[in-house]
Every structure is written in C-alpha cells, then in structure tokens.
Length: 278
Image (cartoon, rainbow, N blue to C red; front, side, top):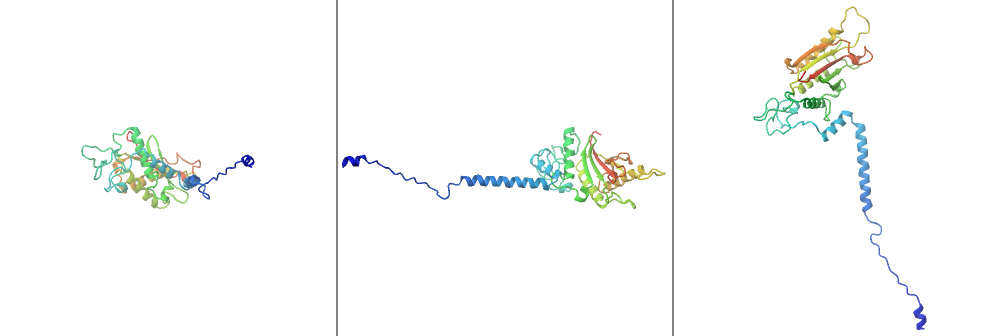
C-alpha cells in the first residue's frame, strides 16, 4: 500500500491574486485626457486662424515676440493713447510722465519716438510701430471699422505712407459741396494723435481718377491739389502744426493704382510721415 501511495503525483495548486479588478489601472486615462486636451487646443487654433484677420494674427504674434519697446512709460499725462506717449526708452520710466520726448527726465535725455538721433534701423522700427498702432497690429485698431476699409499703409524709402482711398458709394469728398466725409474727418484726428508722438515732417499727395470724356479745360490737376489742401486743413484743424508740413502736391490722374483709369479706387490721398533724412 505504501508503495502505491508513493507513486501518486503531487499536485500543487497556486492561487494568483490580482488586484484592481474592474479598473485595470488609471494610466490610460491620463494619456487619453492629454490627447483630448491636445485635440481641443488644435481645433481652437484652427477656429481662431479662420476667425481673425491677417493683421490681428500679426498682432498676436508680435505680442509674444515683441521687437520694439512699446507702452513702457508710466501712466498719466494728456497725450495720445491716454498717456504721454506709447513709446519711450528701453528702460521703464520711474514715475510721473517718464522719459518722453516732451519732458525728458533730468540726467536722462529722451530716447522716445522723436526720430532725432535714431539710426536707420531704429527709425524703421519706430515707423513700423506707428503703422501697427494705426492698423490694428497690436490687436486693436485706432481707426474705426468704417474708415479702416478705406486705408492701406506701407513703409517705403520715403517714410510711412498712409493711403486713404475712395470706394464705390463712399467718396472722400462730396462731389457737389466738396465737404469731406465724416469718417475722413475722424481719421484725420486719429492720424494727428499718432503723429503727435514723433517729430517727423508730413507730406500730402492728392490723386484723382480720369474723366470719362475729353474736356476742353483740364481739371484733374486742380482737383487733386484741392483734395490735398482739404486734407491739410483737416490735419491742421485736428492739431497738426503747419510747420511740420513739408509739401502738398497733386498728381492728377497720372499715377493710377487700378488698371481702369476711371476706377473710383484711383481717387485717393497719400499722407506720408517722412523719414528724418528726407
């Protein structure tokens, strides 16, 4: 009997205990939450790119990678943008109006946007900052949406060119009375407010479209010059010193921007903030 018992196989049963049944751990949940968050951020980015203009996107990009020191003076004052100036030196002002071009602090001459003593690179940055402030480069335009439809800006060797042009059904001046449009009057005030932060001189150029028929007496030269002078009056009434006006000219219909010489788009005024070397 004992021999038979010794021949039986010995079976050892081991019970495996596994914890967390029904949950199987939580690491996958963290990974899934990260994935969902990333997808939400991606779709928000796509929506923002579609819902904003190119200038607004440029303003957002400039906000996170600024190249020009803007709005670095302390509050107070009665100048443009609710303070003395949006431009100042690279070191923040300590108190009062700060180191502005109008009232520089003792022992620290203004390095604001006077344009005097700046290198060409610095003046280029100054003009670009002015362009951004006018055309919503910082996110909020100084110009109303109505006027913004009539404005284009560009930097040239001559300076910052602000082109104000007519649109179908929205002329710069009343054809009968010659009175400027309400939005043009408001725009002139905004430009003077912006020009007040620098000392650069200003040029005004008038352009008009061609007449549909040949006339006995050419009037395009006189009309383009008259438009330029009306804008001069608007700027001076808004506070621009007459001494800052460098020249006022009319180019008639000789420099159209539209292939159609009779297009309304050719009725335009160019206000140029000249570089100091000019």
